Image 1: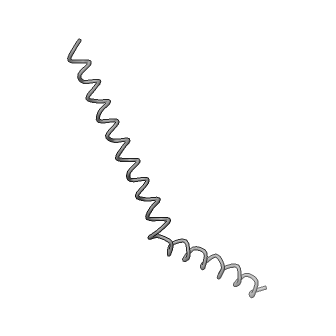
Image 2: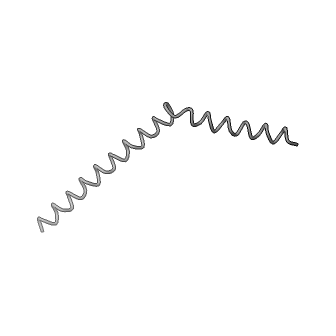
Image 3: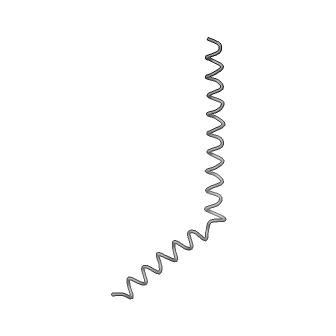
Length: 59
């Protein structure tokens, strides 16, 4: 019975570490998008603006 409890505890510890690591990855990803990745949003906004103007000009 004791060995099973230890295995469950080890599994829970691994799961907790995995969750903490995923939270860190999400936090880093959001930080990148909001700070370093602003050029991505600018590129998308520029492309959408260009398409909007293009559709207006082509009428």
